[in-house]
Amino acid sequence: MNNENWEVIIIGGGSGGLSAALTLVRARRRVLVIDSSSPRNRVSSHMHAVLGHDGKPPLQLLAEGREEVARYGGVVRSGAVVATTAVNGGFSVECSDGETFTARALIIATGLEDQLPEIEGLGELWGSGVAVCPYCDGYEVGDGRIGILATGPGSTFQAQLLRQWSPQIVYLENEVGVPTVEAGSGLAARGIEVVSGAVARVLSSNGQLTGVELTSGAHISLDAIFTAPRFAPRDEPLRKLGADRTEFPWGSFATVDAAGRTSVPGVWAVGNVVDANAGVSVTIGAGALAGGMLNHELILEDIQVAVTAMAEVNE
Image 1 (cartoon, rainbow, N blue to C red):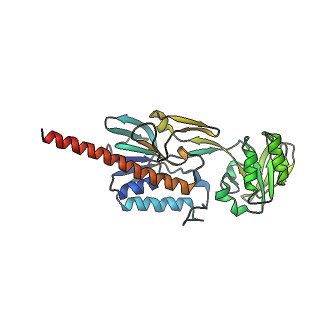
Image 2 (cartoon, one colour):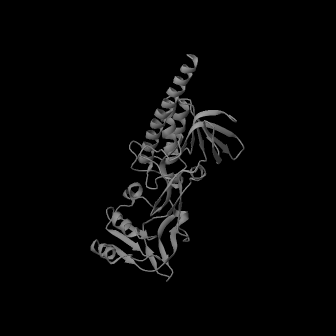
Image 3 (spheres, one colour):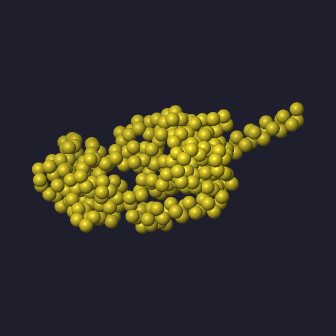
């Protein structure tokens, strides 16, 4: 495949990248997906709220997606992209093993990394007792004693959100506190317990979360923890290509329109690399939309090439 030219290269083989690839290969486009095999939800044993796939392991969904893309002639290649460069008529993509590929257009679907607070035991339980999304994991711990590990001003609303799933919500102030009097009143009004003090470590037994220990030595029993990590998009290709960015309270992300177009002509982006809040269902839809709209743009280019060629013949 070295130096082979493709119509579209998709960097990232998660649910968004594979969804875009499936749309494009069914449109008979030559598509290469380069996948580093590190999806955001790789630590989760099951995914939920995904229509038709509720309870399915996320890695199984991706394996089935790769098979579907291959069935229509798409190629999914393992590897890490180390360089993306604009070249005449398209883009060049270099992988860590030295192979280079070119394409007319790119879709970046590389996702993000959740950067957790540096608290002993927290990372080990990420995806199996510690979570971020109540729509993905709230039902499974419903009516349990749920801790909200505060990481910023939005954590009080995260506590209010989880109150939908359980009356036993414990807001762990950690080093954040309760940001406003109004937020504190809201917590009290809905029976949400507030625990002061920093969290020293997360407690578990046989891989099962049991609670937290504060720096004071106090133990708080819990069945689950929800928190808001820092979102770090894996968007080096977009940065290198000069895509415009938008600053959000939760981080800096490349700017895209509703279909996934970036400010760089021929470069699209979908999923968590541009939208930290997109779950699997939203990401699949975004990938399908981007794939379809990119195909439309390629057709417009094909028309122009054909018209120019016909004019030259008739001269």
